[in-house]
Image 1 (cartoon, one colour):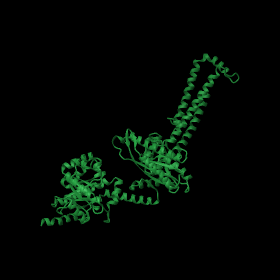
Image 2 (cartoon, one colour):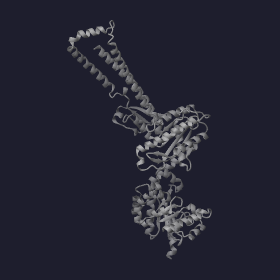
Image 3 (cartoon, rainbow, N blue to C red):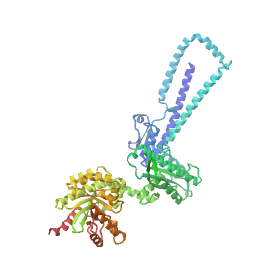
Image 4 (cartoon, rainbow, N blue to C red):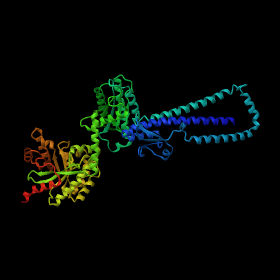
Length: 634
């Protein structure tokens, strides 16, 4: 009985000790996880924050912002009721709160009070069961007494029984060691889960923060280090190849290529493997740390070599896949004294590289922050303008070269501010495209242009069509046809007065979709023009199979008619192709009488440009039509 009570006491003491150890371990893990989540949330990488929490085990942790909104993990009732709360913060900047269930000692499935209660109950059961057994085997008491006598300290165990006892001790010791090792492995798994990206095996954002801290501490202006953030985007990844398994395989392939490249470079610099670590930061984003590598020109060489390697084709699932790749570079310690600043500035440089035509990488400089702030303000203003339907069409006349009559107009987008100032399309269109708002702006222009055309048709000008541009983003929208039909129906515009302008590159990229989307509209009477013709890669055979009615000759050829020897021949070739296919031709950007006379002699049908009129508002356009038609009326 005393032995059982002693055993119970020892068990309870062990459990209490384990309880405290588990509590301390949980607090340490939670602190690391909170640090990792802070970094991911600071950069808007919510998916990475979710991944960190999921690896702890589903349903055991959740992250909330300062308003109490769930931003990562699962807010189960158990987590909310029993979870411990930790701030998601760094250097006094609080981003939210982490709620995490504490790991039980040895990953027990029962809480401490329940375990203690079970032990006490078992002690009582064992006590009564032992008395019952003692009564049943009382006849063997003499033998037991003899056995105890033989195993006393005085007499010792018989030689034949010692191996059995020692074997039992060895078994217990082995079991205990295995249990301790199992607990150690579980602890290591939990710790590593907070620092390893499970998709690729590379370090994640939390590991990057930890490594950056070390790099900053040992770098100097004389021997700088660098952080390179890389963004990869598939050139073409459609259909079945967008499934999760394929994407994971792509990410693994990119990760392997990065690590192989780093291994080669480290060998070239006589550095141990692992000195330059790689990181997986998001679905398409990766990072590389170069330790004390040298001046910028050397970092520039390494970064460009890495981008070239990443752009080489991949063979995945029996298919070849190619990627574009961009890089932003932040120097350490020049561009920041803490991990958050280094990451933020590398990302700023990466965004600038993607926005700059012809660029593939960019070093950070303070002016990028000013440009980024200005662009963010512009993005916010564009979003507000879309919500307020502040974009409006202006109308550039299209004139018949033979008669001089206005026969149509092209609707061009303008953004008029409250002050009355007009913002150039060259300013807001790139921003709208990058924000995914170009389709919304295109819809506003199309609907308002249909209303304008219906207005002049009601005034009797039923032979003047309206042309609206369809952007590549709009063309990808499955609701494009429905939207245009609704715009015509709402405005009361006859379909024959609507003309859609689609760029040559869009037309030749997906001709099947062009027929599927435009076919129903064509059957209603809507006409289709190929815009910027001559700048793409179409040919006569392909154009003959596409449902176009009009060729629009790109303004670049018109402006070069008298400065480029090849331009007249190109324009004549386009006019000849159009005549062969029975299509109308419209020349864009006509600004001089010499250009006009050349087009007349070559048989071009229509023109538009500043020579006749820039784009004007609706009322001014209608007045222009009225004056243009007066001689005919007379």
